Length: 108
Image 1: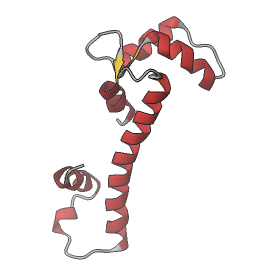
Image 2: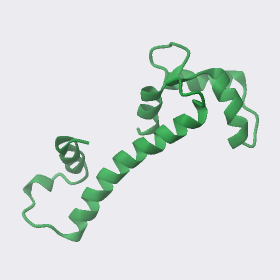
Image 3: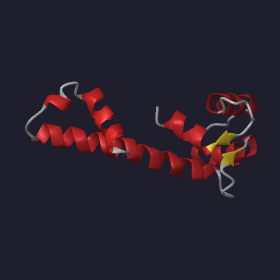
Image 4: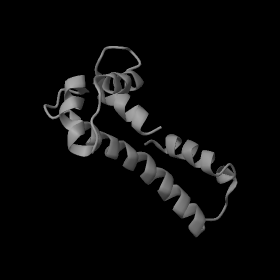
């Protein structure tokens, strides 16, 4: 994240952020938390994406979901549910979930 992005995120959490003149523990905790949660979530999303994209294609197909989901869920997933999931993650309706699309939805 750039300094501007971090500052923007901090202002969302603390509107008075730019007016502060002292550092206190709460400010440090907020700043670290914002940066960690933002970057940590993106890395977590990438790691989750890689669970499905085993061949490092940069996208996930319905078949990838069908092969992996049973390993993590204790109930069956229907083809309709898989198509619905792809629809949620695929704004361009390509039928595949690209990594950036997955990360965007994951980190919202």
